[in-house]
Amino acid sequence: METFNTNIFLKGEKAPKAYFSGGNAWVQILKANEDDLNCQIGHVIFEPGSRNNWHSHGGGQILIVTSGTGFYQEKGKPAQVLHPGDVVNILPGIIHWHGASAGSEFAHIAINPNTQNGIVEWMEPVSDEEYNNL
Image (cartoon, rainbow, N blue to C red; front, side, top):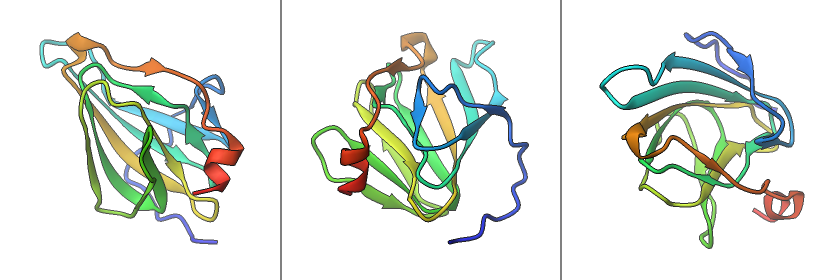
């Protein structure tokens, strides 16, 4: 199993089970959506096998991988393997999920721009079958 690097960000609050499966995840909000910048930034840590549900963002999203190995997948497309330093640009309204590989913790910074168009619309969980067939 891959070891997890020391992180510069706090671990944050445990992510809600209603939107994450396969293990625990933690979210530390780095920049709240509370001003005219229309942007929210968070750092998310996933246990091995943990992933968020299918979802979309009305304003899009940018992921910056900070540690571990994970996956990003858009609905109807093959999953992409993610490593530290990878950047994923997600256009508004694209249905997707992201999370850790089975053998590694995984962390990323999630930037949600254009929050005036909506932050997140949660959908169904990524099934174990979908995840195990990556």
